[in-house]
Image (tube, rainbow, N blue to C red):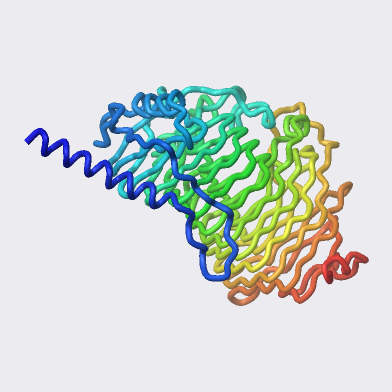
Amino acid sequence: MVASLRLSLAAAAAAALAVAVALLLPPLAAAQGETTCPADVPRRGAWMSVASFGGVGDGRALNTAAFARAVARIERRRARGGALLYVPAGVWLTGPFNLTSHMTLFLARGAVIRATQDTSSWPLIDPLPSYGRGRELPGGRYMSLIHGDGLQDVFITGENGTIDGQGSVWWDMWRKRTLPFTRPHLLELISSTDVIISNVVFQDSPFWNIHPVYCSNVVITNVTVLAPHDSPNTDGIDPDSSSNVCIEDSYISTGDDLISIKSGWDEYGIAFGRPSSGITVRRITGSGPFAGFAVGSETSGGVENVHVEHLNFFGMGVGIHVKTNSGRGGFIRNITVSEVTLNGARYGLRIAGDVGGHPDASYDPSKLPVVDGVTIKNVWGQNIRQAGLVRGIRDSVFSRICLSNVKLYGGDSVGPWKCRAVSGGALDVQPSPCAELTSTSEMSFCTN
């Protein structure tokens, strides 16, 4: 009987490995003829299960040490081609843990990595240098549930298993103003390269869900991000001072911006000086009380060369929101958003220079952002309350703002556009655009 049991276990492990390896092959294109991100996930040289390191997926046992032991084993072993850490079906309760380089974290179908709600077990880490302090409170911040710093060749994927932040305890602390430090993200990777995140559900993050910061060569594809619409600051995906990032084919429904591109906060972001650049976003569907797609408001390192297309949003606060403020410095330039469908929004579009607070009293209000070369085209919306506003800064006029083929409709009527301190062009826009965008010499930018 013992021999039979061993054979059964070996067969089950082999079958699990076969499934994992098969699913790590390059994904098919989203649809015939559509462009997708380059997301070739390699076959790993070694495979191991978190259950082999003392993990128990019963939803009660705490598995923080088991995950730590498994990751340490991968790091020590240094298998050719890296190693895959397999998370079987079950509920794996855990505190925060680190990943390592040349590693795949694979969640099987029915696997749930669930965050402990014992907030005392969450370590504190230093603030990001481009923020100078925790985003919510001075001092440090809580480490993300899944964390990595200075990594290369990291993949988080699977059969649509779930990473569950159990964020309600943190949201309640925020509402009661009893937070001692800034809440943790669900996933944060810092200063890492060659990252793929795919085929995973992120659920109920305490704070932002997916936060690649100071990263390069990042692909996020076929993910689902969920949080209640009244959950505070649960942004979906926030690339931050990162380059060569591609986000596609995902569904996001959260309590804040679905996707927001950032690059540091006021004097700290200016000093750090790392922009977000070369970012592609496409084929995103979702809903939430704030923005569907946003830039900012933390843009002090600069945001440039962003291409966004094929967005489908419903029940939004704002469809597209480009936001910054006096004291931010930095730049927002060469941004193109196209092929957008909105069904229900308070504002179709906002481009505003008076959004967001400051980290401390040391920011310099004379550090004004430059916003130049923002194109919004081929947008169709229904059940829109207010068309939108384009509101620059008196001493830093937003230039070359182009609205083209933007059609926004409401019930009886849609509130008109509101503009100031802006120049650019508007072509085929409904309701009629403001005069600032129809009477400037920059109309040629929009035409071209």
